[in-house]
Image (tube, rainbow over all chains, first blue to last red; front, side):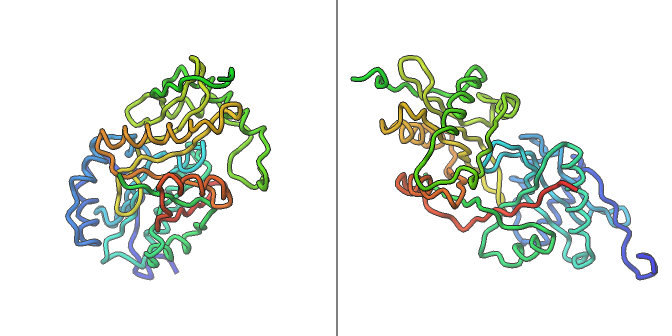
Length: 150
Length: 162
């Protein structure tokens, strides 16, 4: 049985573009209920660190319903990795495998750019997010985070 | 005062420091630390010029400092401005803190960290993080002594090979 026969949406993964900012912010707002547009707008349109080089969106029937905001980064060792800064799927389109498709596409992108690993920083109290990334094949490593607030 | 001592000068790292940084890194790699098996730590045996250069030392996202004694680089703190976490937070991340073994126990590392903290504070970065291999107890203790505390953030990784 094909995806279409099961009634599953046709998902198209593509690189994020400047024009996607509003859609990305709308999904984030729908997920979190928080209006924090300024931060993300700066990240995406400010081109700080080349966010657009790795970020992707997932379209369903031509509309953006999910995104991965990512960039190259150094986390803990002198090897550049793909760092997922944010992953979001519109609540109406969750549990349809869109996050998995986006992460798989993101891994392909990283491979094509010779990045050997993909990392994400998670609050360990966020069991839902932790569970999602475990399900997506991520594993907790030896790196831990020490923080000093100024 | 021995030849290995002198006034410590701290300054921002530049691209011109890359060779000196690699030389110190190589030297520290060859040092043996009690109770630590190097092979179990995450530091690799080789760090290349290209890898350091690609971080753009002295560039807009770079926060690194070099410590000099008598005009010679003897230590460095490699740090960058980053946007990480969910929700995203603007932080200075310390990737590496290394002092030439011949110049250790002169509080140079602490001076490097303080220089970074003061710089971050002056440009409005209110959080500085050190990502540490949890098996490296010496480094963990060191950062705790400098007032860093273990956060609730954990790092998940998936390799992109095959």
